[in-house]
Length: 222
Image 1: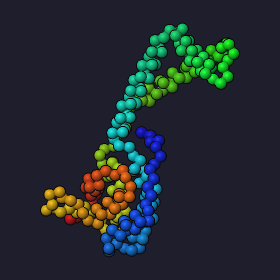
Image 2: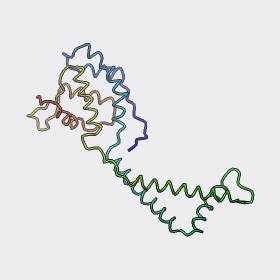
Image 3: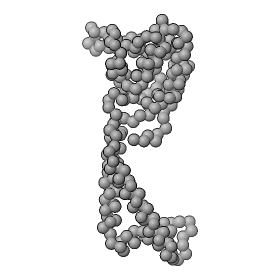
Image 4: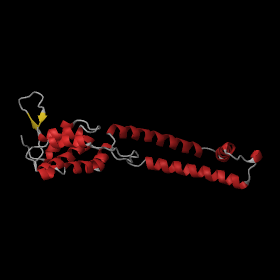
């Protein structure tokens, strides 16, 4: 579906960038660490803006139901017009046009109409009905399903951050957890990096779940 909302902008402050860089592993190459602010700013202007502007499945599903209702009512209106006799079709053309004329800044004196005016009213009616038919046809076409769970904002953000982390630190991102902890709370350099970066903006859900999903791309390391 088309997204007409402008992409969200994220601005990493100098303080935030310094805090993120300070949390990197101490053995990260300094020449690459120095590039991190530029990388994050470019990411914020590009892919991150798109990720944060993605609509959730609930929003898409609600709009899909609304469009289905529009299709149903538009189709009902078309059928109602088709059931009119000639006088009825003439009436909906002329009465709508007469009301439009009366509400205009320069209404016609005496409300007098000529043949050209009547033909114009009919063309306006037929154009409106043609648009409704096109709308019903378009809304009846198969629609894209909402993205699967993996394609959530959190997943896409963490996937990007994994690539950035590996590029800057020359270290594979990992999700570490304490097997002796009941909650299996995650920790480690990549975990800290993701949390620090995501602390600079809103719109990201479960980071830990996203990291678990992203880690399927990497060999397990504890």
